[in-house]
Length: 435
Image (tube, rainbow, N blue to C red; front, side):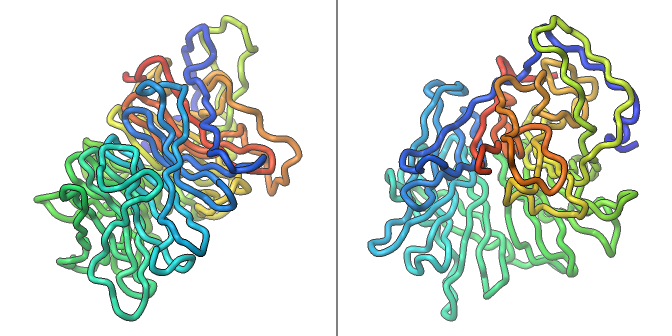
């Protein structure tokens, strides 16, 4: 039975006296962003460092938010800068952070405003970058006919970086960069080639050096896992050919992978979050309908919900998984299989989490999808801004996407502010929510 089917029955949650399991913290913005800064939060390290991008002085720079104490809720943003250009705007974004360094991409110094290069920023252990001037990651032999793009999407604590580049016009190849002193070497994962495959994008790398991503497999998009000494594994799809399609987004140190795949539902083709482990892909379905919060201040220790109404959500994406079996991502109400809502708050996503530990109870995440925005789950989260244009039902909360979860079960992601604009959030717990 698929996990998503568990929600047709009654749900009973045993809660502590306090309604909140998480504490909400807004990450703020870089100085110079004006009265309406635009901020993203893309990744988090085991120490609670968060990275993303923030508008500043008419452009956007990657930032690193560092807590004053490891895994704390009080911290400050560091401007990670960008590759300088004397005559034009410099731009960067931080996509991932580990205890070693933060990585991302920005304008190509040789082709400003036309293409991008993968970057490693200062602020961690890496000594090859300085504050405000990131290190430009190398690419395989540059082709003579065009200026290639490159992007870094993940980094582990040993400094291995995963990403992609344009090997030829419009053709992307997955890359891995490996540390060599104060610099990096680069490897195109398609050399040597794999039969029937073009590995397009590497989206994650764990401490064992296992790399995940997605590529073209016989004309379809399939998620892959590349294990040192073992080789390439096709993670498959939730739906058989000719509708097979999957994308891997996150991996933990146990080799468990999450992402999203096309799924056949009673209302048509949708994207569903998946968990892949031990050779099997499991459909995580979509979250149930948001529940009714208890009266604030009431000493309620148990909430019993009647049989859940049909879920309003159509699509779901699993973006990250930690070593405790907790998964975070988001869901939306779009009537088609789309991830367009990752680009704009108008897609009305909602941040969600999933616990793979059967029987987990608060102060852990309840088994199954759990709306992080429920008032008894998250304390201090802002309300949904009023007066926003809506193409459908408003989201249940201002939290619209979760992108990272570390082994302390801290979560980072996006929330929506008046404008509408996006801002970064951090959710913290008194202790890891292990089963």
